[in-house]
Length: 222
Picture (cartoon, helix red, strand yellow):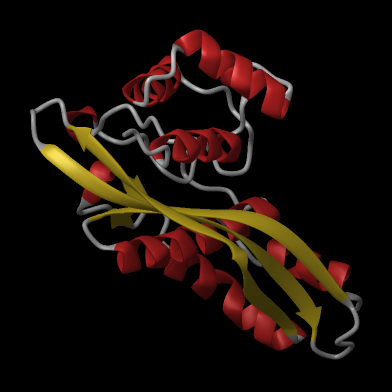
């Protein structure tokens, strides 16, 4: 069998899953999900029998992290670390190693107070979601995960690293405020941004926005 046929056989061997794990910390306390170990147990024996390997790799040049400070609806101040990176999952036919399928995948993780846990969360969750979606595996609900409970979440105002979303009003106002402290009026900021990037401020990418902010912050005022 070629690799595609072997993957079909692996899918045929899987019956379905039940949510067997529950989140115990961070912003998603209490929600239940299908554990990665349950999925791996379901496919490992068939993969070994057919000689199929799954090799993950991280594109380290795309790895980014940031802090997300927020207040819960109970009034507690929290800091989460958010890690984003791109990965590739490569299925390999061990009998014919040149017979392979490589799938790019976006990897994201969020954990409170510990960036190493955020990395681990990103890779663990990423593997689970990849297997569920690539193999089209059924769960006991449409989604592999339930929605987070409402007693410990806030609105996440962090830009997606892989798309150029519009800047928020708060980000634009922050830019104006930084420039104003350096003696530069809002109209002048608009003019300078338009001259440099040929676009309005609200249309800047996050990278361009950060570049402009850094430029104004580095201006020395005598």
